[in-house]
Amino acid sequence: MRIDKYLWCTRYYKTRSIATEACKKGHIKIDGTNVKPSKDVFSGEKITIRKNQINYEMVVIDVPANRVGAKLVDLYRKDVTPKEAFENQDILKFSKDYYRKKGAGRPTKKDRRDIDTYNDEEG
Image (cartoon, rainbow, N blue to C red; front, top):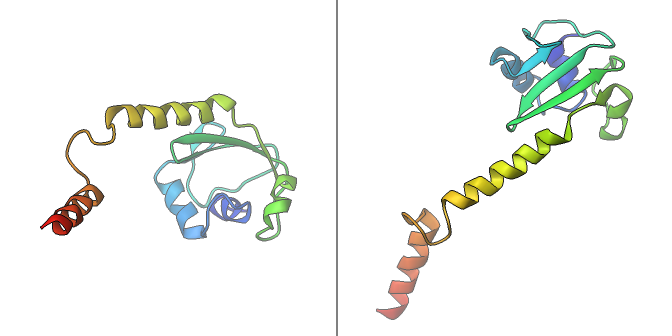
């Protein structure tokens, strides 16, 4: 089975075209090498997926015949993503909050609307 179809069947991507684009951009690796969307997937291969700034790692157990339900996905792959990958995401989230505190810096569009409605109520 092709890698883009496999990722769609195991519900890592919502559509097959999104999976194809991820392969073309180099977000998908099999055993450490970038792959084209047409690369075939076999049992025992380790796939690394870069999605939402997290490197998901999984081992192919079996290849499904077609798209499977969410509860059956674990029959076809084993998730071996290290916990550090998710901790890095939490750290990144906190660092973004650190740089822009609420009320500091340039007002956002929502802040501007709130200011405009406040001024309209007074005047």
